[in-house]
Every structure is written in C-alpha cells, then in structure tokens.
Image 1 (tube, helix red, strand yellow):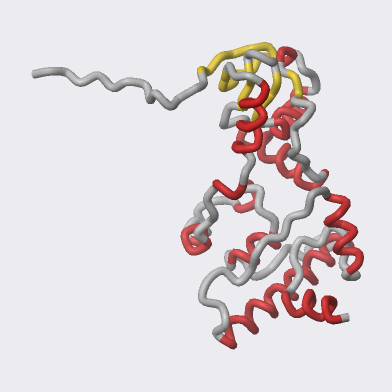
Image 2 (cartoon, rainbow, N blue to C red):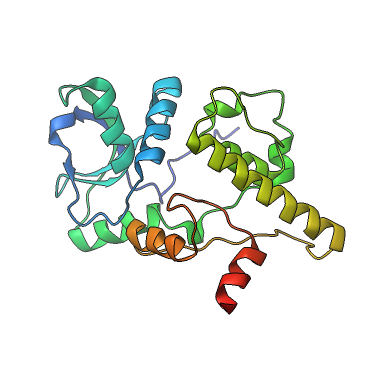
Length: 221
C-alpha cells in the first residue's frame, strides 16, 4: 500500500524563528493606533494568558509587520527589550510588507461574532479574561448589569450608557423592527476626530455607544 505523505501548504509563506527582541524594528508607517484604555486591557490579557500567537517580522527590512500593540505591551511586562521571542518570519520587499500590514488589521475581511454562539460560553469562562467590557457584553446580550461596587465617575457613565442601550434594545424588540443586528460601527481616521465628533453631540469623548434616537435628534438640530 502506498503511504501518503502530507506536505506543507504551498501557501504558507512564513517560518517560525526565535530572534532577539532588539532585532525587531517598529514599522514607521504602521497606521494602527490604540487607546490607553485598550492598551491596558491588552496588557492585562497578555499577563493572564501570555503571548499565544506569534507576531509577524520581515527579515528583509527588520520591520515588525503585525503585532505592534502586543509587542509594546510585552516590552512593558518584561520591563526591557532584552529577551528572545519566536516570530513568524517573512522575507518580502517593502511594498508587499505594507500590503500585508494592512491585510492583517483589515476588519473588512475578518469574521464577526455570532452573539448567540457567544452566549453558550456563559458560565464556562470568566468574561473578564476575554477583553470584552461590560458595555460590549451588554450589547451582545450576555449580561444585563455591571458591578456597582466602588462606583467611580467612569463607572457611572458606563452604567448610564448601558441603561440607554438596554432601553433602545427593548424598544427595538417591542416594535419588532430589527430582524438582524440592531447596530452598526462608525470609524474615524483618528481618535481626536472621534472625540471631537462626540463632544459636538454633547457626549463624553470616550463614549462607545449612542442610541439611534439620540443621534437623529442631534442631526435635526
């Protein structure tokens, strides 16, 4: 009987190698940014779960192609750049490197969450270790409350936002308007432009959710 040997996919264009952290250069063109709040959350998850996926490094240029935010937070946890790290090494020219950088972070070609499937994890995992906020989980329909202990101004604002979201969701359900996802995402070129937009609506600059009625009211004014 002929023995079939599995071959490495011809589409795999990287090799896993272990290099010194100091060999990795931050790509000066990297368009991805992260807020202080999100960076803190990422660092928390790295500390909890560790680095469970490799970053992408271009041998030809020395540039980091994918994983800038993770590597920055890893440096903070290590308290130096004097360590070894295993990377997915590619060897491409600068043009292709930039294209790959965008592809790796392009939400337009990534999947979305099935909220009903997410709910099946409830009771099996600690949601605090997933990177989701209470507001996220409320929108997903996974929780209907937030912890009121040690309530700060920020937590009060969050609570108010969640109450608005819950009211909007209930109204939408009662009217049987939504037959699919009852929200959409708006992105801005920069964090400052997003903050300026929210301030014009008399919202907090770090608000993450607003209701359709609230937005339409201000559009008419």
